[in-house]
Image (cartoon, rainbow, N blue to C red):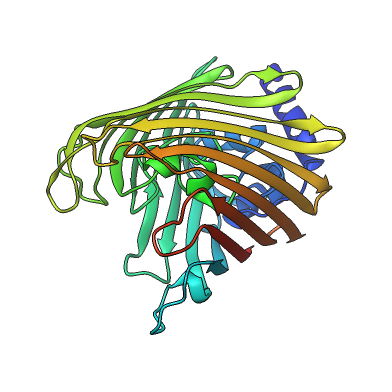
Length: 390
């Protein structure tokens, strides 16, 4: 027990000196810690402490007042947050003769691109058994619930065992659990242009409506997630598809790494009650550390989906690097995608910039140059975004 306390104290001390990043402040309110405690470089990239907080089911608390009694321990306030993304996108295809909404060739203001409300944190802490939750609601869309997961965690001496019911309208079969910031879960990716920097997003393995149960075994060396799911949002029928993630989390040359092997398989009904085959495999690697005095994120993904599956015949490889060139303020990155869709090349090069105006407010720019025109939208895309959470 003393070793555990000392280890936790060391992690907290290291987090206190972590670089700034924006985040969802619901958990900052619960823990009494700055957003930078859980995030590396910039939101939503998780550092080691953020991954440990997630593995414990979002239940860790700090100075916030609690309501406690026999078999009861909950925050005195229901911790909430809001996230706003305002985007401008411009591609270089021909502008339509008649103006239309959502056409990026003539410039598209998306206000909001996303406006979500979050609730999260501890539901119960009864010794070795802990229950947490994270709820994301769309305030600008037709559906109130965009994502909900309720991890039930049993802490053993050397491992954590979790059962995580989850549902999401768009975040994919690994929404239940992943520690990667590589876009395996659509919401957790290091850059805004998701299909350009993540093979999982390009192929579709990492997104889509999903309801399921994640069964997770977690140790200091890594974790395994086996999720049974259906490609439906809420009220799923016959969760007969499987998503598996096997992950190792070693420290290599002072870089904290997350290495994953992922697969989806099976046939399930989608929201329209049509049978859909889910078939794909992927590999990912990420490393966070320091190069030339700059905090650095290194990323690589590979994914391949089958023509017989709902994702189609796609494969992609991405490699990327992200450098914090001004501490606590400016990060610059680049990514290269080599991809094929139905055996047609679809490569892309992306440049990224994130300027932190504050820990919870950032100005973001992404520019992608494609090897071929993307439909009617030309062969490049510029995205400018203001992202704020409170």
